[in-house]
Image (cartoon, rainbow, N blue to C red; front, side):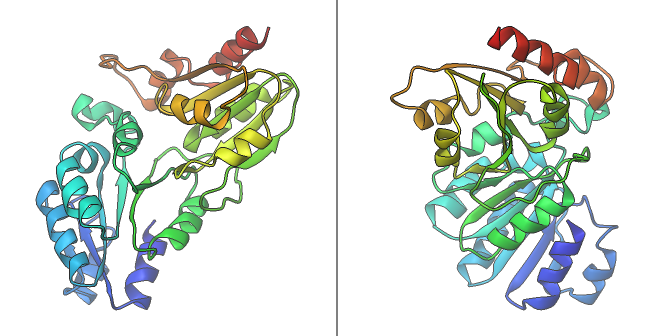
Length: 288
């Protein structure tokens, strides 16, 4: 992330970068070198989004970096009114994913971020699973004049896939079902499906959703969705993509409930059945 943002600040004088306290140490050199365009606003998320919108209305391109729940939930009204309603562009990069900050408690969880932002018309939602994928998506969207949300994770995939904004990647072709996965869940799905007769599609652009690739690669009558955010976030998109076909839909994801368990992200993934073994068992049950 730092590489792409640093290049943007260096190369384009019409850009500004606002930190919401987190990341201030990593960008300490840029805070000193570009004091007029790189600022640590501090723990003031709604106000920072408002400031960024004002800068955007003045013709600049703002990028804001913070923790997922504090930008998505705490600042939702500012995203809606200041950016979407005003029709201005900006970039919102978050860390934390669903529960990367597992030891900091429920206040730092945000499995609902993608589902929440999908309610904002025109919001671009990018869910890269590696640093390389973030760089590709940021390069495509950072200056496109739209509000773009980049959901980052500390638990990147080991599987690297070349991605394109707005397009899903076909990773495997089979005959019994179509399996869709997003972001950092790719490694677990690759492990789960390695010897299964299924098609695997990988999405890093969550919005706008690529209906065409799903429709063109639909096999059999079953679609299984693997989501590292709230389960069911993309069921409506799947239904739209397969309109006219008789299809059964199932999947795995973070349950829509308060997570009261303790432990690391890996502990939570294991407990929720979101690792390869659990996903494989659910897919086998679904296609049997």
